[in-house]
Amino acid sequence: MLNDVKQNNVNKELVSEQIEMYRARLSGLENKIKESKLPVIITIDGWSASGKGSQIAQLIKCLDPRFYKVMSFGKPNEVEKRKPWLWRFACAMPMQGNFLILDRSWYRDTANAYLYDEISKSEMRKRLDDINVFERQLADDGYLIVKFFLHITEEEQKKRIKKLTSSDYTSWRIDEHDLYNLKKREKFAKYYEEMITKTNTPSGVWNIIGGDDKTGAKLEMIKALVLAVEGKLEAKASGSTFVPKNQFPFADVKPQEFKMANVQKVSEAALDKTLTDEEYEKQLEKCQDKLFKLQNLCYQKKIPVIICYEGWDAAGKGGNIRRVANALDPRGYEVEPIAAPDKYELARHYLYRFWIRLENDGHFTIFDRTWYGRVMVEPIENITPPDRVEQAYQEINEFEKLLIQWGAVVIKFWINIDKEEQLKRFTLRQNTPEKQWKITDEDWRNREKWDIYEKYIDTMIEKTSTKAAPWTIIEGNDKKYARIKAMKTIIEKIEEKLEKNK
Image (cartoon, rainbow, N blue to C red):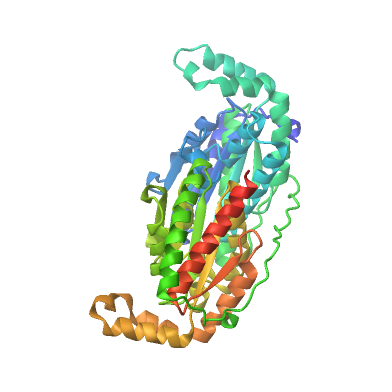
Protein backbone atom coordinates (compact mmCIF):
# COMPACT_ATOMS: atom_id res chain seq x y z
CA MET A 1 0.00 0.00 0.00
CA LEU A 2 2.52 2.62 1.15
CA ASN A 3 5.08 1.50 -1.42
CA ASP A 4 2.50 2.13 -4.15
CA VAL A 5 2.16 5.81 -3.24
CA LYS A 6 3.49 8.03 -6.01
CA GLN A 7 6.30 10.42 -5.20
CA ASN A 8 6.03 12.98 -8.01
CA ASN A 9 8.53 15.70 -8.76
CA VAL A 10 6.37 18.64 -9.82
CA ASN A 11 6.81 21.88 -11.66
CA LYS A 12 6.82 24.20 -8.67
CA GLU A 13 5.65 27.27 -10.58
CA LEU A 14 2.61 25.55 -12.07
CA VAL A 15 1.76 23.75 -8.86
CA SER A 16 2.05 26.95 -6.82
CA GLU A 17 -0.64 28.52 -9.01
CA GLN A 18 -2.94 25.57 -8.34
CA ILE A 19 -2.23 25.77 -4.62
CA GLU A 20 -3.27 29.43 -4.59
CA MET A 21 -6.44 28.54 -6.49
CA TYR A 22 -7.40 25.91 -3.90
CA ARG A 23 -6.50 28.26 -1.06
CA ALA A 24 -8.90 30.81 -2.51
CA ARG A 25 -11.61 28.15 -2.73
CA LEU A 26 -11.00 27.08 0.86
CA SER A 27 -11.11 30.69 2.05
CA GLY A 28 -14.39 31.16 0.20
CA LEU A 29 -15.83 28.10 1.94
CA GLU A 30 -15.25 29.45 5.46
CA ASN A 31 -18.47 31.44 5.65
CA LYS A 32 -20.44 28.46 4.34
CA ILE A 33 -18.82 26.27 6.99
CA LYS A 34 -19.86 28.74 9.71
CA GLU A 35 -23.38 29.24 8.32
CA SER A 36 -24.01 25.50 8.00
CA LYS A 37 -22.41 24.86 11.43
CA LEU A 38 -20.08 22.24 9.97
CA PRO A 39 -17.33 21.12 12.37
CA VAL A 40 -14.18 19.91 10.60
CA ILE A 41 -11.45 17.73 12.09
CA ILE A 42 -8.21 17.31 10.15
CA THR A 43 -5.76 14.68 11.37
CA ILE A 44 -2.18 14.68 10.08
CA ASP A 45 -0.07 11.63 10.75
CA GLY A 46 2.91 10.11 8.99
CA TRP A 47 6.56 9.20 9.16
CA SER A 48 8.94 11.12 11.40
CA ALA A 49 10.42 14.06 9.47
CA SER A 50 7.70 13.80 6.83
CA GLY A 51 6.91 17.51 7.19
CA LYS A 52 3.69 17.47 9.22
CA GLY A 53 4.41 20.80 10.91
CA SER A 54 5.31 22.67 7.72
CA GLN A 55 2.30 21.25 5.91
CA ILE A 56 -0.01 22.44 8.69
CA ALA A 57 1.56 25.89 8.48
CA GLN A 58 0.80 26.02 4.77
CA LEU A 59 -2.72 24.66 5.22
CA ILE A 60 -3.81 27.32 7.71
CA LYS A 61 -2.47 30.31 5.75
CA CYS A 62 -5.83 31.06 4.20
CA LEU A 63 -7.97 30.31 7.29
CA ASP A 64 -9.39 32.80 9.76
CA PRO A 65 -7.44 32.15 13.00
CA ARG A 66 -10.57 32.82 15.07
CA PHE A 67 -12.16 29.66 13.75
CA TYR A 68 -9.45 27.05 13.84
CA LYS A 69 -7.27 25.46 16.46
CA VAL A 70 -4.07 23.51 15.90
CA MET A 71 -3.23 20.95 18.57
CA SER A 72 -0.12 18.79 18.79
CA PHE A 73 -0.51 15.64 20.84
CA GLY A 74 2.65 14.20 22.25
CA LYS A 75 3.05 11.48 24.82
CA PRO A 76 0.12 11.43 27.32
CA ASN A 77 0.93 13.22 30.58
CA GLU A 78 0.22 11.81 34.03
CA VAL A 79 -3.33 13.23 34.18
CA GLU A 80 -4.18 11.95 30.69
CA LYS A 81 -2.92 8.48 31.59
CA ARG A 82 -5.54 8.37 34.34
CA LYS A 83 -8.42 8.89 31.93
CA PRO A 84 -9.90 6.72 29.15
CA TRP A 85 -7.35 6.66 26.36
CA LEU A 86 -9.55 8.68 23.95
CA TRP A 87 -10.42 11.25 26.63
CA ARG A 88 -7.97 13.96 25.61
CA PHE A 89 -9.18 13.82 22.01
CA ALA A 90 -12.86 13.81 22.96
CA CYS A 91 -12.27 16.89 25.12
CA ALA A 92 -10.74 18.65 22.11
CA MET A 93 -13.86 18.37 19.91
CA PRO A 94 -14.32 21.55 17.88
CA MET A 95 -17.49 23.59 17.96
CA GLN A 96 -19.79 23.68 14.96
CA GLY A 97 -18.40 25.90 12.22
CA ASN A 98 -14.80 25.49 13.42
CA PHE A 99 -11.71 23.58 12.34
CA LEU A 100 -9.59 21.38 14.60
CA ILE A 101 -6.22 20.46 13.08
CA LEU A 102 -4.38 17.66 14.86
CA ASP A 103 -0.63 17.33 14.47
CA ARG A 104 -0.68 13.61 15.22
CA SER A 105 -3.88 12.17 16.56
CA TRP A 106 -5.40 9.14 18.24
CA TYR A 107 -3.46 7.13 15.67
CA ARG A 108 -0.11 8.18 17.13
CA ASP A 109 -1.22 7.17 20.64
CA THR A 110 -2.14 3.73 19.36
CA ALA A 111 0.99 3.32 17.23
CA ASN A 112 3.41 4.34 19.96
CA ALA A 113 1.73 2.33 22.68
CA TYR A 114 1.88 -0.79 20.52
CA LEU A 115 5.28 -0.32 18.91
CA TYR A 116 6.89 0.49 22.26
CA ASP A 117 5.33 -2.65 23.78
CA GLU A 118 3.05 -0.72 26.15
CA ILE A 119 -0.03 -2.56 24.84
CA SER A 120 -0.52 -5.98 23.24
CA LYS A 121 -1.51 -6.66 19.65
CA SER A 122 -5.06 -7.51 20.77
CA GLU A 123 -5.27 -4.25 22.74
CA MET A 124 -3.95 -2.35 19.73
CA ARG A 125 -6.72 -3.83 17.58
CA LYS A 126 -9.29 -2.94 20.22
CA ARG A 127 -8.05 0.64 20.00
CA LEU A 128 -8.48 0.63 16.23
CA ASP A 129 -12.06 -0.57 16.81
CA ASP A 130 -12.50 2.25 19.34
CA ILE A 131 -11.26 4.73 16.74
CA ASN A 132 -13.76 3.49 14.15
CA VAL A 133 -16.56 3.90 16.69
CA PHE A 134 -15.36 7.35 17.76
CA GLU A 135 -15.05 8.62 14.18
CA ARG A 136 -18.42 7.14 13.20
CA GLN A 137 -20.14 8.80 16.15
CA LEU A 138 -18.66 12.15 15.18
CA ALA A 139 -19.56 11.69 11.51
CA ASP A 140 -23.13 10.69 12.40
CA ASP A 141 -23.38 13.92 14.39
CA GLY A 142 -22.37 15.98 11.35
CA TYR A 143 -18.59 16.22 11.74
CA LEU A 144 -16.32 16.04 8.71
CA ILE A 145 -13.12 14.10 9.42
CA VAL A 146 -10.30 14.43 6.88
CA LYS A 147 -7.31 12.17 7.58
CA PHE A 148 -3.86 12.56 6.04
CA PHE A 149 -0.88 10.25 6.19
CA LEU A 150 2.34 11.81 4.91
CA HIS A 151 4.43 9.10 3.30
CA ILE A 152 8.10 9.64 2.48
CA THR A 153 10.61 7.10 1.21
CA GLU A 154 13.28 5.70 3.49
CA GLU A 155 15.96 7.53 1.54
CA GLU A 156 14.13 10.83 1.95
CA GLN A 157 13.55 10.22 5.66
CA LYS A 158 17.27 9.57 6.23
CA LYS A 159 18.19 12.70 4.31
CA ARG A 160 15.80 14.92 6.29
CA ILE A 161 16.79 13.54 9.68
CA LYS A 162 20.47 14.00 8.83
CA LYS A 163 19.85 17.58 7.73
CA LEU A 164 17.85 18.44 10.86
CA THR A 165 20.36 16.90 13.28
CA SER A 166 23.32 18.61 11.61
CA SER A 167 22.14 22.10 12.57
CA ASP A 168 22.09 23.56 16.09
CA TYR A 169 18.91 25.42 15.11
CA THR A 170 16.92 22.32 14.14
CA SER A 171 18.51 19.40 16.00
CA TRP A 172 15.97 19.80 18.84
CA ARG A 173 13.25 18.74 16.44
CA ILE A 174 14.62 15.20 16.25
CA ASP A 175 14.17 13.03 19.33
CA GLU A 176 14.60 9.37 20.22
CA HIS A 177 11.22 8.49 18.75
CA ASP A 178 12.16 9.92 15.35
CA LEU A 179 15.38 7.90 15.30
CA TYR A 180 13.51 4.78 16.39
CA ASN A 181 10.90 5.38 13.68
CA LEU A 182 13.67 5.30 11.07
CA LYS A 183 15.60 2.41 12.63
CA LYS A 184 12.47 0.22 12.88
CA ARG A 185 10.94 1.48 9.65
CA GLU A 186 9.86 -1.97 8.46
CA LYS A 187 8.10 -2.63 11.78
CA PHE A 188 6.36 0.76 11.66
CA ALA A 189 5.39 0.28 8.01
CA LYS A 190 3.68 -3.01 8.80
CA TYR A 191 1.69 -1.37 11.58
CA TYR A 192 0.80 1.70 9.48
CA GLU A 193 -0.57 -0.52 6.71
CA GLU A 194 -2.77 -2.44 9.17
CA MET A 195 -3.88 0.82 10.80
CA ILE A 196 -4.87 2.42 7.49
CA THR A 197 -6.55 -0.75 6.18
CA LYS A 198 -8.65 -1.25 9.32
CA THR A 199 -9.67 2.40 9.77
CA ASN A 200 -10.36 3.54 6.22
CA THR A 201 -14.11 4.07 6.50
CA PRO A 202 -16.75 6.42 5.03
CA SER A 203 -16.66 8.25 8.39
CA GLY A 204 -12.91 8.86 8.12
CA VAL A 205 -11.23 8.30 4.77
CA TRP A 206 -7.44 8.15 4.62
CA ASN A 207 -5.61 10.39 2.16
CA ILE A 208 -2.09 9.02 1.69
CA ILE A 209 0.09 11.85 0.44
CA GLY A 210 3.46 11.33 -1.20
CA GLY A 211 5.64 13.74 0.75
CA ASP A 212 9.10 13.54 -0.86
CA ASP A 213 8.22 16.61 -2.90
CA LYS A 214 6.91 19.14 -0.37
CA THR A 215 5.26 21.38 -2.94
CA GLY A 216 3.40 18.48 -4.52
CA ALA A 217 2.27 17.37 -1.05
CA LYS A 218 0.90 20.86 -0.33
CA LEU A 219 -1.24 20.69 -3.45
CA GLU A 220 -2.55 17.19 -2.77
CA MET A 221 -3.48 18.03 0.81
CA ILE A 222 -5.30 21.28 0.17
CA LYS A 223 -7.05 19.79 -2.87
CA ALA A 224 -8.28 16.80 -0.84
CA LEU A 225 -9.48 19.09 1.95
CA VAL A 226 -11.34 21.45 -0.39
CA LEU A 227 -13.07 18.61 -2.23
CA ALA A 228 -14.08 16.96 1.05
CA VAL A 229 -15.51 20.20 2.48
CA GLU A 230 -17.36 21.02 -0.74
CA GLY A 231 -18.79 17.51 -0.92
CA LYS A 232 -19.90 17.58 2.71
CA LEU A 233 -21.55 20.99 2.34
CA GLU A 234 -23.40 19.89 -0.80
CA ALA A 235 -24.61 16.72 0.90
CA LYS A 236 -25.71 18.64 3.97
CA ALA A 237 -27.64 21.16 1.87
CA SER A 238 -29.43 18.40 -0.04
CA GLY A 239 -30.02 16.18 2.99
CA SER A 240 -28.06 13.31 1.44
CA THR A 241 -25.26 11.17 2.86
CA PHE A 242 -21.74 12.29 2.06
CA VAL A 243 -19.41 9.50 0.93
CA PRO A 244 -15.93 10.88 0.18
CA LYS A 245 -13.69 9.52 -2.56
CA ASN A 246 -11.33 6.85 -1.38
CA GLN A 247 -7.96 5.64 -2.66
CA PHE A 248 -8.58 2.03 -1.69
CA PRO A 249 -11.48 -0.11 -0.38
CA PHE A 250 -13.32 0.75 2.80
CA ALA A 251 -12.76 -1.48 5.80
CA ASP A 252 -15.55 -3.94 6.58
CA VAL A 253 -16.55 -2.54 9.98
CA LYS A 254 -19.40 -4.34 11.68
CA PRO A 255 -21.46 -2.68 14.46
CA GLN A 256 -20.46 -3.72 17.95
CA GLU A 257 -22.83 -6.22 19.51
CA PHE A 258 -23.77 -6.28 23.19
CA LYS A 259 -25.02 -9.00 25.47
CA MET A 260 -28.16 -7.67 27.07
CA ALA A 261 -29.37 -8.16 30.64
CA ASN A 262 -32.89 -9.22 31.57
CA VAL A 263 -35.07 -6.18 32.19
CA GLN A 264 -38.49 -5.35 33.56
CA LYS A 265 -40.82 -2.52 32.76
CA VAL A 266 -40.80 0.27 35.33
CA SER A 267 -44.54 -0.20 35.83
CA GLU A 268 -43.83 -3.74 37.05
CA ALA A 269 -41.59 -2.61 39.92
CA ALA A 270 -43.05 -3.37 43.35
CA LEU A 271 -43.28 0.01 45.07
CA ASP A 272 -44.58 -1.21 48.43
CA LYS A 273 -41.12 -1.95 49.82
CA THR A 274 -40.30 -0.03 52.99
CA LEU A 275 -37.87 0.21 55.90
CA THR A 276 -38.61 1.30 59.45
CA ASP A 277 -36.63 4.22 60.83
CA GLU A 278 -34.70 1.86 63.08
CA GLU A 279 -33.81 -0.53 60.22
CA TYR A 280 -32.84 2.41 58.02
CA GLU A 281 -30.47 4.01 60.52
CA LYS A 282 -28.81 0.71 61.28
CA GLN A 283 -28.30 -0.23 57.61
CA LEU A 284 -27.30 3.31 56.64
CA GLU A 285 -24.38 3.35 59.07
CA LYS A 286 -23.27 -0.11 57.99
CA CYS A 287 -23.44 0.70 54.26
CA GLN A 288 -21.67 4.04 54.63
CA ASP A 289 -18.83 2.47 56.59
CA LYS A 290 -18.46 -0.20 53.90
CA LEU A 291 -18.53 2.36 51.09
CA PHE A 292 -15.79 4.40 52.72
CA LYS A 293 -13.53 1.34 52.93
CA LEU A 294 -14.28 0.36 49.31
CA GLN A 295 -13.52 3.88 48.12
CA ASN A 296 -10.03 3.57 49.59
CA LEU A 297 -9.51 0.24 47.87
CA CYS A 298 -10.66 1.69 44.54
CA TYR A 299 -8.20 4.54 44.95
CA GLN A 300 -5.32 2.18 45.73
CA LYS A 301 -6.12 -0.04 42.74
CA LYS A 302 -6.96 2.92 40.44
CA ILE A 303 -10.49 1.68 39.74
CA PRO A 304 -12.81 4.46 38.52
CA VAL A 305 -16.43 4.29 39.68
CA ILE A 306 -19.17 5.97 37.64
CA ILE A 307 -22.62 6.15 39.22
CA CYS A 308 -25.51 7.32 37.04
CA TYR A 309 -28.78 8.55 38.56
CA GLU A 310 -31.94 8.87 36.51
CA GLY A 311 -35.53 8.86 37.70
CA TRP A 312 -38.87 10.59 37.76
CA ASP A 313 -39.06 14.21 38.89
CA ALA A 314 -39.19 14.24 42.72
CA ALA A 315 -38.06 10.61 42.84
CA GLY A 316 -35.44 11.43 45.46
CA LYS A 317 -32.22 11.44 43.42
CA GLY A 318 -30.72 14.30 45.41
CA GLY A 319 -31.27 12.72 48.81
CA ASN A 320 -30.01 9.40 47.53
CA ILE A 321 -26.83 10.96 46.14
CA ARG A 322 -26.29 12.87 49.38
CA ARG A 323 -26.28 9.67 51.47
CA VAL A 324 -23.78 8.05 49.11
CA ALA A 325 -21.55 11.13 49.03
CA ASN A 326 -21.63 11.47 52.82
CA ALA A 327 -19.92 8.09 53.04
CA LEU A 328 -17.02 9.11 50.81
CA ASP A 329 -13.80 11.03 51.25
CA PRO A 330 -14.60 14.35 49.50
CA ARG A 331 -11.16 14.41 47.87
CA GLY A 332 -12.03 11.29 45.89
CA TYR A 333 -15.37 12.04 44.24
CA GLU A 334 -17.26 14.63 42.27
CA VAL A 335 -21.03 15.00 41.90
CA GLU A 336 -21.99 16.29 38.45
CA PRO A 337 -25.52 17.75 38.25
CA ILE A 338 -26.56 17.77 34.59
CA ALA A 339 -28.88 20.55 33.50
CA ALA A 340 -29.80 21.67 29.98
CA PRO A 341 -26.65 22.01 27.84
CA ASP A 342 -25.22 25.50 27.37
CA LYS A 343 -24.48 26.94 23.92
CA TYR A 344 -20.91 25.66 23.90
CA GLU A 345 -22.06 22.12 24.70
CA LEU A 346 -24.90 22.26 22.18
CA ALA A 347 -22.35 23.13 19.49
CA ARG A 348 -20.55 19.79 20.01
CA HIS A 349 -21.39 16.10 20.06
CA TYR A 350 -23.82 15.44 22.91
CA LEU A 351 -21.39 13.11 24.72
CA TYR A 352 -18.77 15.88 24.90
CA ARG A 353 -20.09 17.32 28.14
CA PHE A 354 -19.85 13.92 29.81
CA TRP A 355 -16.37 13.17 28.53
CA ILE A 356 -15.05 16.38 30.09
CA ARG A 357 -16.63 15.55 33.47
CA LEU A 358 -14.96 12.17 33.97
CA GLU A 359 -12.79 12.00 37.09
CA ASN A 360 -9.40 10.28 37.27
CA ASP A 361 -9.08 6.55 37.77
CA GLY A 362 -9.46 5.65 41.44
CA HIS A 363 -12.13 8.35 41.85
CA PHE A 364 -15.92 8.36 41.86
CA THR A 365 -17.95 10.39 39.35
CA ILE A 366 -21.61 10.65 40.38
CA PHE A 367 -23.94 11.95 37.67
CA ASP A 368 -27.25 13.50 38.71
CA ARG A 369 -28.88 12.88 35.31
CA THR A 370 -26.78 11.66 32.42
CA TRP A 371 -26.35 11.06 28.72
CA TYR A 372 -29.72 9.28 28.83
CA GLY A 373 -31.46 12.60 28.35
CA ARG A 374 -30.65 12.01 24.69
CA VAL A 375 -33.17 9.16 24.49
CA MET A 376 -35.78 10.47 26.94
CA VAL A 377 -36.18 14.24 27.16
CA GLU A 378 -34.84 15.14 23.72
CA PRO A 379 -37.18 12.98 21.59
CA ILE A 380 -40.22 13.84 23.72
CA GLU A 381 -39.48 17.56 23.41
CA ASN A 382 -38.64 17.19 19.68
CA ILE A 383 -35.12 18.47 20.28
CA THR A 384 -33.38 15.62 18.45
CA PRO A 385 -34.49 13.95 15.19
CA PRO A 386 -35.77 10.36 15.55
CA ASP A 387 -32.90 8.88 13.51
CA ARG A 388 -30.29 10.42 15.82
CA VAL A 389 -32.20 9.20 18.87
CA GLU A 390 -32.20 5.67 17.46
CA GLN A 391 -28.45 5.90 16.82
CA ALA A 392 -27.91 7.10 20.37
CA TYR A 393 -28.82 3.75 21.93
CA GLN A 394 -25.86 2.16 20.16
CA GLU A 395 -23.61 5.16 20.86
CA ILE A 396 -24.40 5.04 24.57
CA ASN A 397 -23.65 1.32 24.77
CA GLU A 398 -20.37 1.96 22.95
CA PHE A 399 -19.48 4.85 25.28
CA GLU A 400 -20.14 2.75 28.37
CA LYS A 401 -18.14 -0.14 26.90
CA LEU A 402 -15.18 2.20 26.48
CA LEU A 403 -15.51 3.26 30.13
CA ILE A 404 -15.59 -0.38 31.22
CA GLN A 405 -12.53 -1.18 29.09
CA TRP A 406 -10.80 1.71 30.88
CA GLY A 407 -11.46 -0.25 34.07
CA ALA A 408 -14.50 1.59 35.37
CA VAL A 409 -17.39 0.21 37.37
CA VAL A 410 -20.49 1.67 35.68
CA ILE A 411 -23.59 1.65 37.90
CA LYS A 412 -26.93 2.92 36.56
CA PHE A 413 -29.99 3.65 38.67
CA TRP A 414 -33.54 4.40 37.63
CA ILE A 415 -35.36 5.64 40.74
CA ASN A 416 -38.98 4.70 40.30
CA ILE A 417 -42.04 6.14 42.01
CA ASP A 418 -45.70 5.97 41.08
CA LYS A 419 -47.81 8.85 39.88
CA GLU A 420 -49.62 9.26 43.20
CA GLU A 421 -46.36 9.52 45.16
CA GLN A 422 -45.05 12.10 42.72
CA LEU A 423 -48.19 14.23 43.17
CA LYS A 424 -47.80 14.01 46.92
CA ARG A 425 -44.18 15.21 46.73
CA PHE A 426 -44.97 17.96 44.21
CA THR A 427 -47.72 19.28 46.48
CA LEU A 428 -45.45 19.21 49.52
CA ARG A 429 -42.77 21.16 47.66
CA GLN A 430 -45.24 23.72 46.41
CA ASN A 431 -46.70 24.27 49.88
CA THR A 432 -43.34 24.44 51.71
CA PRO A 433 -41.61 27.82 51.22
CA GLU A 434 -38.06 26.48 51.66
CA LYS A 435 -38.75 23.73 49.08
CA GLN A 436 -40.56 25.76 46.45
CA TRP A 437 -37.36 26.21 44.42
CA LYS A 438 -37.48 22.48 43.73
CA ILE A 439 -40.78 22.64 41.83
CA THR A 440 -41.23 24.37 38.46
CA ASP A 441 -43.89 24.73 35.81
CA GLU A 442 -41.83 22.33 33.70
CA ASP A 443 -42.21 19.64 36.37
CA TRP A 444 -45.99 19.92 36.20
CA ARG A 445 -45.89 19.93 32.40
CA ASN A 446 -43.71 16.80 32.34
CA ARG A 447 -46.12 15.09 34.71
CA GLU A 448 -48.86 15.44 32.10
CA LYS A 449 -46.66 13.35 29.77
CA TRP A 450 -46.22 10.53 32.30
CA ASP A 451 -47.42 7.77 29.94
CA ILE A 452 -45.21 9.02 27.11
CA TYR A 453 -42.17 9.18 29.39
CA GLU A 454 -42.88 5.69 30.71
CA LYS A 455 -42.81 4.31 27.17
CA TYR A 456 -39.44 5.96 26.44
CA ILE A 457 -38.01 4.83 29.79
CA ASP A 458 -38.90 1.21 29.12
CA THR A 459 -37.33 1.41 25.65
CA MET A 460 -34.20 3.04 27.10
CA ILE A 461 -33.78 0.34 29.73
CA GLU A 462 -34.43 -2.45 27.25
CA LYS A 463 -31.91 -1.16 24.68
CA THR A 464 -29.13 -0.04 27.05
CA SER A 465 -29.22 -2.56 29.89
CA THR A 466 -26.13 -4.47 28.82
CA LYS A 467 -24.73 -7.26 30.96
CA ALA A 468 -21.60 -5.17 31.50
CA ALA A 469 -23.61 -2.08 32.55
CA PRO A 470 -27.15 -3.13 33.51
CA TRP A 471 -29.85 -0.86 34.87
CA THR A 472 -30.95 -1.25 38.48
CA ILE A 473 -34.53 -0.13 39.11
CA ILE A 474 -34.76 1.37 42.60
CA GLU A 475 -38.21 1.16 44.20
CA GLY A 476 -38.47 4.72 45.43
CA ASN A 477 -41.86 5.32 47.05
CA ASP A 478 -40.07 4.85 50.37
CA LYS A 479 -36.97 7.07 50.24
CA LYS A 480 -35.28 5.17 53.04
CA TYR A 481 -35.59 1.86 51.20
CA ALA A 482 -34.36 3.47 47.97
CA ARG A 483 -31.23 4.89 49.61
CA ILE A 484 -30.24 1.60 51.19
CA LYS A 485 -30.86 -0.39 48.00
CA ALA A 486 -28.72 2.04 46.00
CA MET A 487 -25.84 1.81 48.47
CA LYS A 488 -26.05 -1.97 48.66
CA THR A 489 -25.97 -2.13 44.86
CA ILE A 490 -22.89 0.11 44.71
CA ILE A 491 -21.16 -2.04 47.33
CA GLU A 492 -22.01 -5.22 45.45
CA LYS A 493 -20.79 -3.92 42.07
CA ILE A 494 -17.50 -2.63 43.51
CA GLU A 495 -16.86 -5.86 45.38
CA GLU A 496 -17.46 -7.82 42.17
CA LYS A 497 -14.90 -5.63 40.38
CA LEU A 498 -12.33 -6.00 43.14
CA GLU A 499 -12.77 -9.77 43.07
CA LYS A 500 -12.22 -9.84 39.29
CA ASN A 501 -9.09 -7.70 39.64
CA LYS A 502 -7.43 -10.01 42.16
